[in-house]
Image (cartoon, rainbow, N blue to C red; front, top):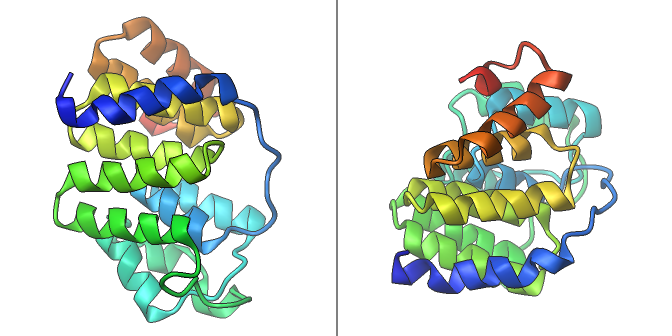
Length: 205
């Protein structure tokens, strides 16, 4: 295991006992949407979430630029009805939400391909909010980008424990298990997704 991920791996293990499903929230927050983008959620899944739940904030140009830095799909802005249907306040200002600040730092690091820094920022956020499935999802994708596949599987597993109905989280776990060489886990998670969405292209990969 790479030494730079030892602290994150220990964090994942220590949180395993805290995996309790959390109730769904109404309206997607700026923090949650950014975590999903960092986590590599597909444009179709992002659009589906926004259509079913709506967004609880008004994204400003800085936020849209931040989504792009985090790796948002090119057609994200056309799929998500930001300006027409969004409501509420702007995303948190710097210093107003420490967890969001860590997400911003992670997104900036990802843009520079500094996945070590991105992982550390997300791990710091998880220390403040250890039951945040979206942060585990985001961390899992960062770990995949850094080819730390075993740790990525742990992160995605925690995400699925906290949000067992989230198919993108199960897809992330399936892929991480596949890359980690755990064929049984990969097949089990892919089958779970296909059971509910038989035509899901990502689960067939």
